[in-house]
Image (cartoon, rainbow, N blue to C red; front, side, top):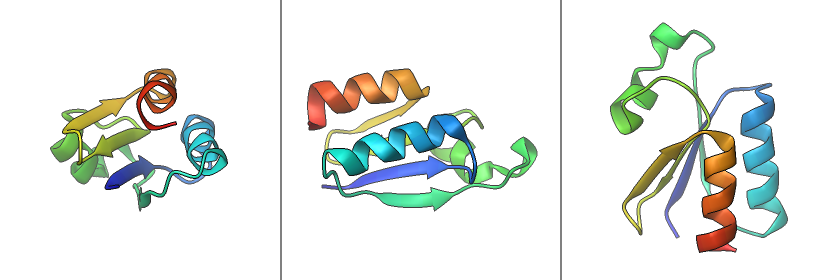
Length: 79
């Protein structure tokens, strides 16, 4: 499974998503982002915006942001 989670150290929304992925045993790669929005070029490139968390599911061609949306996707699709 090719899941990537873009997150920021200390971000509670990012931690919520990472914790749930860990709880259900979904393997994923973490890409740590810069604290400054202006320096989050990689996040902007993959998602079109600079906010985190962003989840990329390469197997299904899905890229999404907003922790609640990501958690819903995880429960519906990956759990």
